[in-house]
Image 1 (cartoon, rainbow, N blue to C red):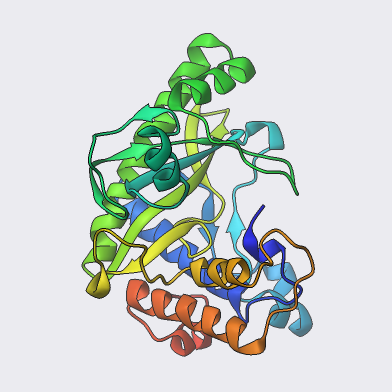
Image 2: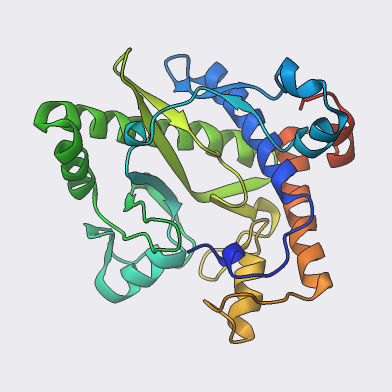
Length: 282
């Protein structure tokens, strides 16, 4: 369950920001990794929808055109990549010396950068459920059960390879702009006709990633963030973690939105208001 699912109100302009930032990343990644296939087509609304001013107002910058895949062609795993030891990974490491059951080097400190990013998948729970952390072998078995031994193993390997490469390219891009991507999750699907793995859903947003300001990064402690960690921390400190229908103070919502906007502007290189005012170009 996402922390943002527990609150009564929405974070201001969150939908538009996640959409525009995902589009930016899809464009960057398609250029940086020519072999990568994505479902993204355009931010422009179809001609049939542009005839209605009301629909344009509601959907512009809050929707994108994508290639559609049947539900059974979306892989039932979350492809998580961790470049730093933090969050649930740090908790497991502190207790067992592992992350998702994977043995890790001794002596790591909280928030420390890993020598190599690690692929730590999870299951994809039904709406309202909770994802389960698994290791790469278990992820491969899940895909083998759906697609057969050989095809499932091939798809699992491709997902892992792509997830690690996408993270590496994005991490290097972001740190040059003052943001550390500590970890992130991707979703992939299958283009059955071409027999290719395709990147789908949102990508590298504050909802799917941990973004830290590089200027204040310090090993050995938890970090300030540009993502929903601020919201998580507020809920936890007020004893509201996991409770439904929480009504957040306006200042907490606005501060969360401001952090999202700051991350957007650093990564995209444009002011948020400029991006919104443009015609589906960011």
